[in-house]
Length: 304
Figure (cartoon, rainbow, N blue to C red):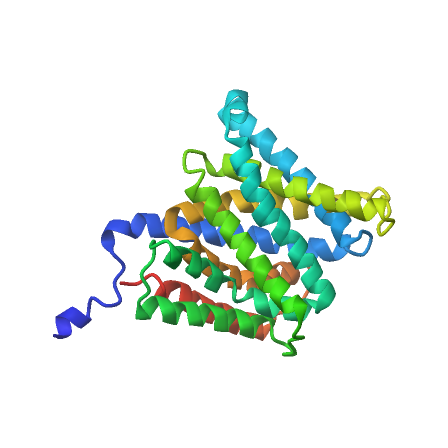
């Protein structure tokens, strides 16, 4: 009886390499993603959120397609299933991005940050829905731990502003996870860089339409050119925290699935704290405690 119990907390040896690779890719992805938060603070001081998302996606897509062509050849770019990828990106990443912006408009950044900790629930639902994941006690406990850790890390002043913004924030998280999942499952013949390129192109189409509407209605003005330091922030926000991060994120999803990969998202506050500390900021005990709980949850969700 005891020998059987000793196997409860063992990861299947046949999948060890895949799990290590997938979790490493997820860790890198979310760290790069977190680098975008300090950069966004600089850029939001000079640009409207819609304007910022427009330029962010245009620069990210241009970078991705250039890298794709250089690595895999121009022919692979022309032969890709663009229509399928654009549909996924437009409905998922594009619509989700706009939902997120309006969620912050109807509520506040703290509420959105707290609700973002629930994104792994959406990812889990996607895998359970089509039979790719069977829930067990360790995964459920790991999921709860990840959400709890993320909640602790961002809950300095717990205050959730209920209303339409909550639904929009939850919908945004679901859209992002749906699009990431479909990028891998529906475009399985492509590399991560190709998947990222064509799906983000769909997001760029959606955001371009949004920008054009807002500009036409006079709700936003064409922005002034950024200074050199602001342009550097835009490069970090677009190329590193979006384009490169997404390549690693989809590669992680390909290895361990959308549910496990999404658990890593709740490390974001800890990574942001590290980056801010390196820039001269201070340590945040909540982020450290939260990250420790998230790490435990990520491990627990994968044991057999």
